[in-house]
Image (cartoon, rainbow, N blue to C red; front, side, top):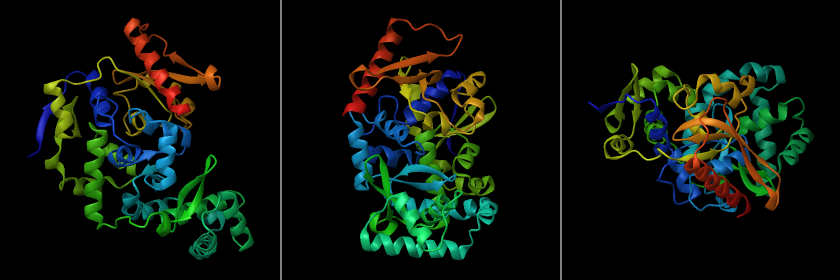
Length: 367
């Protein structure tokens, strides 16, 4: 039977997640180490993703995170939910093998609307690989020209759906930078070693790593995060539950790593912490139930109108207390927070913590 713990103070939930997500006093040594620990980090907004890594790697600058992507030490692709994520290169293949088929079924109707049959995907694959293997990585615009010239139209989102299909099936991947955009590379060239795992082994490992890096979390959180069937998730979980701690709170069962659970006894960090997190950060986005760190009454201020676009958040002691924005550029750039109405005014210590967080972000940008 897995170790058990009980939680009575709801404010503790966010601080436990800070520790799991390397936002407490346990930051990672490098971008590659951090992404490997987090397992997958949403990255549809590239600039936000760079800071999501940087805020968890003490002393890292934006150049360090870009270099990790540019070298292939961190890769960006569509491993789950039809959304771009940062992952470790050795993990991408087994993630795709777990999730691609289910996602393909979910968008089959859209592909029919766009006139994309499997033969079209195969033709696009051949066109893309012929060009990339002979001349090297290519821009998205350049690849779409190749598709168009080869009889695979790209208008009306058809091009991006073709590209997504080729990436989900492990033929293409986003590769090195060209300015502020990533070129598209051949998967087997850009990632010469990416593991293929049996489905049961892959899913069990996925579960274990999610709860270690995101816990406390529920099985439903993981099923939403990956869009894998909850029934299959529950079956695979039996293989790893002994390696996790069961946490009961308000009638719901959560799971987390023993190391983080031990902080409940030895001292949980983060009571006076303040973080400036990017939009789409895993601390907010990585769960289907976000109420432990975000008051439901403020949810529309983070995702206005439920449009799926997450704003930057101010997080104090594991609780989202407002949003923030960067105003100005260069030496005149400043971080401007906007705290939620009714939030207790910041005292001197909180103001100092905010100033340190802002200084850290500005330093990250100019590294």
